[in-house]
Length: 95
Image (cartoon, rainbow, N blue to C red; front, side, top):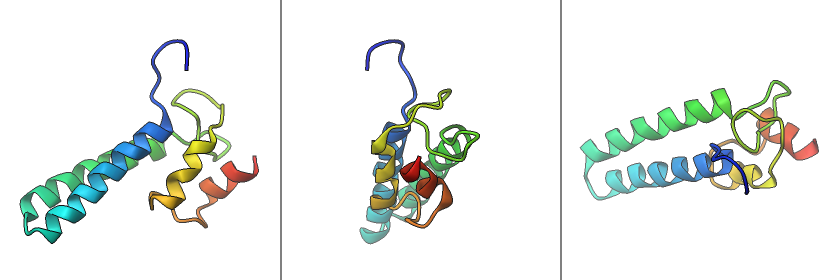
């Protein structure tokens, strides 16, 4: 994308995915301290996305501060960020 740097929702979701998977891996390998720390960070990212990445219409934005849409945000269901039946995801898909 050309223009000023933006906080893209799809990129934020991928950051959440990385930390979500890292926390699960930490649990698997017995590194509970790291797992807890990474879980806390992925919770912060998720809260930020849900606060800033959803428009007033209830759809996932392309980036913070716009009403533009981006189909890559629909990957939120595939990655487990949102349940496929989540209204924000469904509204994004039909808009």
